[in-house]
Image (cartoon, rainbow, N blue to C red; front, side):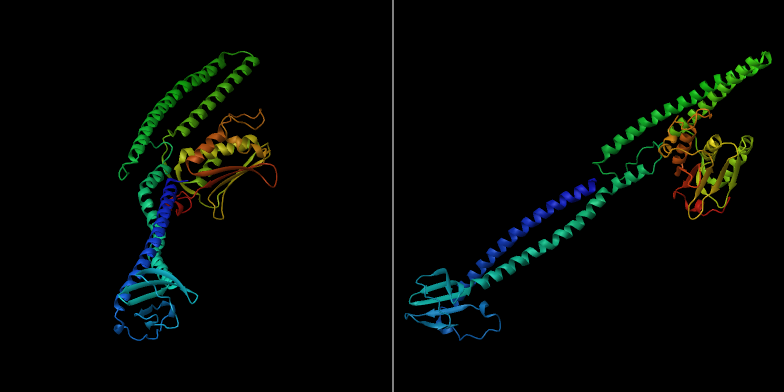
Length: 443
């Protein structure tokens, strides 16, 4: 769970508990105060009613009858001198104070005021008092209940605003390439998060130093390895005029082929290392993958003819993207060469641009295909699923996948459904700027 949601849930739970506690305290406190207020009211009415002459005849109430106060006044006689409701006879108390009585199937709260021979009793139904007290208590609790969800909404907004700088940092890091080691901007970063950002910047600095050392190593290795291999090939060529006999020529041919394979393997290893380290010196410019594929087909067509293969290109639409032309040509060349190597003589390799709302290239061959379990493993370095007599290094598809990933291209392999053979698809992702996506065919 994210820090934002964890904080929101924790603080919302605390607010809920505190709100419920405050509501309960308010409810019982207001309820108690309401009862005290009603008792005080009974006392005041008793004082006013002490003078029997000021007690006027009862007026018929338009309200609920149970809400009325019952006023009884006695003099020295046992019968009440005056009563607002003679039908209800609450017994006369002998002393001043409060009491609870049950009369006419109702419970009453009674206040008695005795002064000399005169007694005044003020009574109110307990049910009516309780109802009034609960209405007052609920009126005090209701705002608290309403404010709890409102406080949750404001809390979510506050946490969002507080966490927004962290979201910007995460978005900045997500948009970076693997080779981007520039420090993270600290402007607007909260002081509590500043140590974390500083530590990440320190880590990026050390990573930059490591990449720089790797870059120098790759550059030095390229010179140190290529030079002796080139010298070996040159020396084999110098030995040929001096050689005698077919057997020696055959050995020299094998030696020259081995030096050529070693040179090719070395170049591919260095290229893959540069790609993975992000040190290839890419120059990303607007490109059309269909145009680049057509150029690769023209370059490899003589090789296809020499092997008895038919290599064709169907360019129906533009495939615009932003990328490095040299790397994209390497990507296409490796895929087409892979099809040329494993397609038997008389076969066909077709390259076509995709349509129907999809941007990309499809390369289809008529070779033997692959075991479905190996369709992803062939992208591993030095993994070869083909027969051993087929020449190869096991790095061509690994290089192709690395270039595709670096350009936001989805590279997939699948067996043909109509017959034996492989289908390689390059799908250009939606990571295109509007200008390139709307460019005309061929730019």
